[in-house]
Image (cartoon, rainbow, N blue to C red; front, top):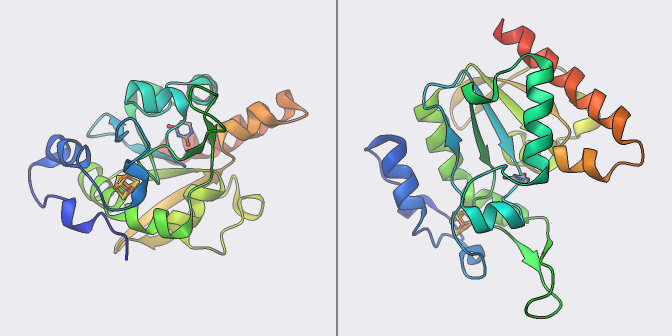
Length: 207
Ligand code: URA
Ligand code: SF4
């Protein structure tokens, strides 16, 4: 089975993790992507935000949530009363998965499979063990399935505080929609306000 497990170092902290992840070949996604996009942010962050996978901009720049979805997320976090500078942001899958009709054509995001999410899980588990956040904000269905299992439905649990064992540790989680879904929404303002409202639930847990 595909797995990142043999690539994950058992000591050396986040710096060692990030370095090792750059050479991960735990699943085929490393082949077409530019680089591994590991989590970023404060090692002592009280809140960890988990997205799906890097997008086009993230793949080029090597950092999570630096493209349009990330800009929207930062704005929503501030509006909810969470300082983006005090968060740790990462993704369920660390390589960009895309389709491309022809070379030099636009790269179109493709959802990772359950196998790829499972393969990449050891990186997320290692990040959680080191950062030890008080709260995990789950951004959308893919992150939800990766963390909480395939029966996860974002519409059923968004804006609520869940307590679950994740990779062997008791965690508190607040699920919400993915910021990219806000950008794609027919009613962007309503979708954005929904995201902010869910993040305010997270802010209250941290208060
Ligand atoms: N979408 C994600 O899920 N993660 C990113 O890092 C960027 C866009
Ligand atoms: Fe490794 Fe995850 Fe990249 Fe697959 S997606 S190669 S498991 S870092």
